[in-house]
Image (tube, rainbow, N blue to C red; front, top):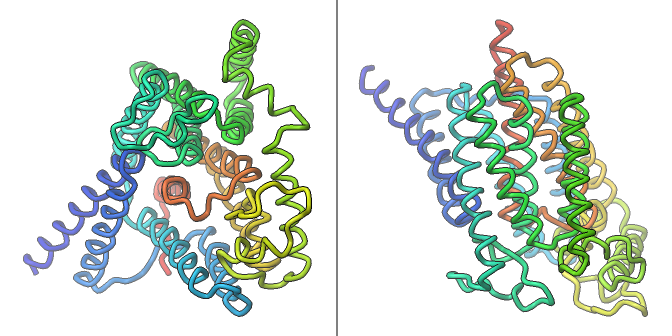
Length: 414
C-alpha cells in the first residue's frame, strides 16, 4: 500500500513537471511542448492505472466538444482525401486530449499561478527575440522567409509569422487581465512590462487579422474590467493613433491603413476564396468534403478573378469547417465556441478570488481573439496556436472546478 502511494506521488510530480515544461516550451519549441504533452499523458495513465480510477472531470464543455469530434468523424463518409482526413482527425484528438489533461491534473490555485507565470515569462522571451529579429534581420534558426517581404515580419521562435502573431495576441490578453485585477503591485508591474514587450512584438508581425483579434479582445476585457480599464484603453488608443500620425511612413502605419483599403490584393483574394468555400458548402452541405478536403476541391470552384490557384485553406475558421465537415461540423463547432464564451463570462461574474477572476477574464479574451482572428485565418491545424487555445479551454474549466470546491462541492466525475 505504501509503495502504491509512493508510485502515485511520483506520477503526480511527473505530471506537474511535464505541465511546467509544456507551458515553457509552447512559445519557444512547439515540438518540445508536444513531447512534454506525451510524457504527461503517460504519467497520467500510469497514475489512473495505479489508483484504478479512470473517471474524468465533468464539464459543460465536454458534450459540445464530443459532439464536434463526432461531427468531424462523420465527415469521413464524404471525405475526398481519406488520408488527409485521418491526419486532421488525429490533430483534433490531440487537442481534446490536451484539454482533458489540463482539467484533470491542475487542481490548485498555486499550481495554476506558477504555470501562467512560466507561460508569460517564456512568451516575453519569445517576444523580445521577435523584436531582435525585426531590427537585425537575423534569425538563428533559419526562419527568414518573412524577412523577404516589403517589411521584415517577426516570427519569434516559430516558422510562421501568423502563428506567432496569434500566440502573442492570446497571451497579451491574459497579461492585460492580470494587470487589471492583480492584488500585487509587483505582479501588475511585471505583467505590464510583459504586455509592453508582447505588444511591440505583435505590432512587428504586421499581421492585420491578429491586430483586429487583439482589438476585439481588448474591448471585451476592458469593458468588463470597469471604468479605469476603459480609460486605460482610451489612453492607449490615443497613443497608438498619435504613433500612426507621426510615423505615417512606417511599415506598421501603412499596414494598419491597408485594413480599410477595399482594393488590397490579399483582401480581394480572400473574398474570392470565401465565395468558393460557400459554393463547396452548397454542394456538400451535410458532412462536407472531409478534413483537408477543401484544398483538394478548390480548383473546381476557383473564381476567374482569383490570382492564386493553389490555396491550402479557406482563410476563415468557420467557412473552412463548413466546407470540410458540413453544417454538422460547423454547427457543433459554433456550439463549442458559444459554450466557452458563455461559461467564461459566468466564471468571471461569479468568482470572488481576484486572481481566478483575472484568469477567467483572460480566458474569455483568448476565446474572443480566437473567434475574431479566425474570421481571416484557419488555425485548427496549427500546432502553435491550438496548443495555447486548448490549454486555456482547460484553464477555464479548472477555474469553474475551483469555484465549486470553494462552495463546498467536489467536481463531479464521469
